[in-house]
Image (cartoon, rainbow, N blue to C red; front, top):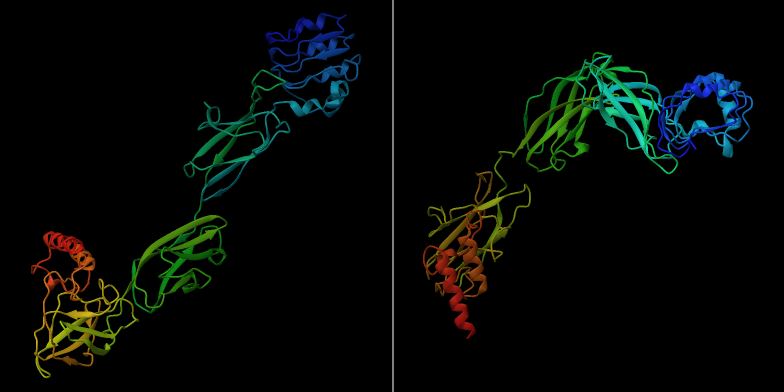
Length: 472
């Protein structure tokens, strides 16, 4: 009983001397090597079963001399055997039991190992996968810097259907050598791990010729304008007009794709860009020259500066209340974006006007109110107001219309932070916002109505205690 044991080693050549042998069953062992040519001398052999071993290599053509083999009685499957002789392949298939094709279960090496073109991301190593893919395994790719080795395991594929990998870590213009073998893991029909012979070695040189883009310096442009940037492209292997040239922006709000144009089709090109209307800021622009997947890039920064012209003159200034304090309102300027305001005051119509607050007022960001409050007024005193708009620290050329009033019933209520003549939770919120240094960000509040001239945590605590007393 030679089959289904743990026998290992080669099938002995001496088996060829057993002239009266009719059945040779050595399947399901750990036999290696190939089928010995001496077996072709077994003139009485009717069945040979060598399946589920680790046999490897080419089957001798002389096995076609075994004319006594019965049809559908032998088995050669689940090894690493092969033959390029189709007459022999067909002869053995006729004798193969289960009407199977023995070649479809052989762990042989892949064929047609070659490389694709050099691309930006690397170079592709390709091969033709083997037919036997149903059982687990894959291809082991070995690499060396020398044609004769030593070779080291470079990568393993996930299965035997894979037909290529990308060699992405090669140094340009250096020569590398690769060869592959197939591995099939243990499975129900063979408890051995099978490895094929290696493929022939192929050499790989990663030669990459990227297109060239001239250097481009950082640029500046004005708000609501366009700019032309000249540059040139070239390539060692193709005509410049065969290059696909494009440009992308890191800030599509500032430079949307429809505002970017490449002009020209030769070496000299022009990038024309339009900033989005009323927008300011900066973006990184990247010009890309593409030659069949090989891409060159040139990046630079473009800054859009606000127009330095004075903002529009504000209008519609009016007094909406003069009881307890003065409340002002006016028509807000929507464009350009970011306009703030300075409020000027005088005690006479023809007097000197002075700004009455430290920071420009952004009316869209005022805390707890939608109007401007001047709490620092006295009863029965004439006050005349004018305003100017401010953008990027530049004031409008002219004042707005003037508005005048004589306040009545002025009564500063300590702790009234927002000037509504009551102390409530809104005043606590304003006090806490001031303590958190929100006010310097262009907010305007009636902070002089605090308990002290300076707002601190004590004021917020006193306001909370006051509200607690009110609830008792």
